[in-house]
Length: 111
Image 1 (cartoon, helix red, strand yellow):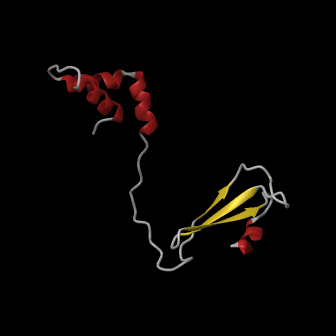
Image 2: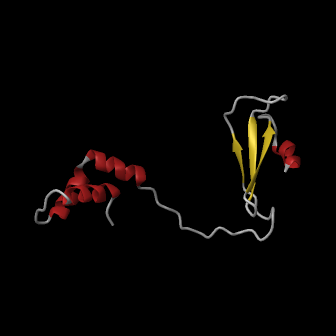
Image 3: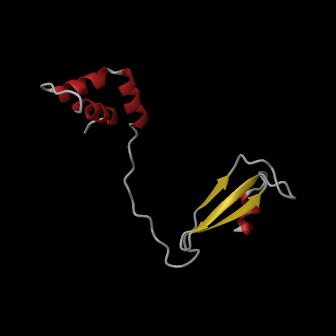
């Protein structure tokens, strides 16, 4: 398996010139090139195994949630966060305004 930077370099070179053992030369060059090394490091994370996401069979069986933060306070009660809940069956989002100071116990009744 080659690094993405090697693949891109080979694609560019093969349209311009042909030399004996040019692919090996490209590999050797990319091993010593600082820019190529940085590109390999930034994308060199191990990928997790893919798993099939379970599909819901009825509404509100599966509902992922996430917080939207960093928004300016707004509304008549100066809400500063937004809790986003999505019904995966209908693919319908619900947006709940909340205060930054709310605890899990304050937020649970909203769900």
